[in-house]
Image 1 (cartoon, rainbow, N blue to C red):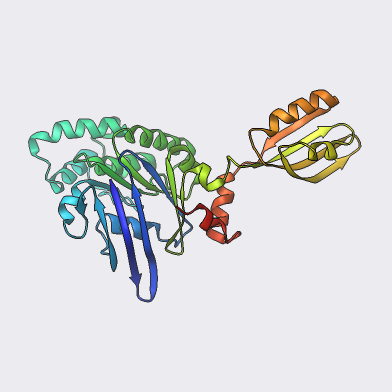
Image 2 (image 1 turned 180 degrees about the horizontal axis):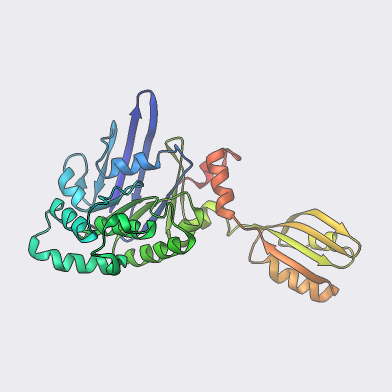
Length: 317
């Protein structure tokens, strides 16, 4: 549905985006991650035709954004990070304005508005001034504007920026519903949102792709994991170390009759059952078993901060 082919964009001597290529299949939700200045917004602006790349091209279906910009843009709904609304308008007036820009036939306004208002949950504020709305509702109105014209592709730049936790959850639910018949590229710096909504992830670093893949592929979660284990008993560490699923063990804290360990397991699924059998056989007391959280956060740090320089090459597809 989306093909980005070797796009490069320079501002003076700085390459904000450098030879970036990827594809997104119809119906996919893809998260675009990267630290500030990685090139996420520039990439999205090139995809929507707001910027012209110095090199490369973007196609939406079979439409080139460079060669057939008007037709390509009709297939794109875009929510910029700044969400530039006309705050002196009513919501109804704003959506009417967007419909006119998108050449929606006037006879279709009613059906179009009914659909986007229902999809984004802005029924209660449809006739209210935008400047009276909460941040959450303003984001919904911006998304409703992106949906006018029924585009097949949504490109959303930080759609939950500035929202409180409840509003973020509402927006995630909304995106999951829209994903049933839209292809979505969403940029965010909130990794938990990507985990909740995205089928695949693209990680940018210094204007280039550091990695692409599913969460499992980027984190290696199927291969292994770390656990914090607190156990009461005798000779706990050497016994844990001898388990087949365990790669290595680090002692965090040791007291009389109790030890806290960091366990690096070869297989995240195999370690807990092995530990359970051991507890029963040795009469150990399990006080705590906590899988290490933040697998994607750790992978993101490794990919973008260069904590492990070989990580991007292994994850890149």
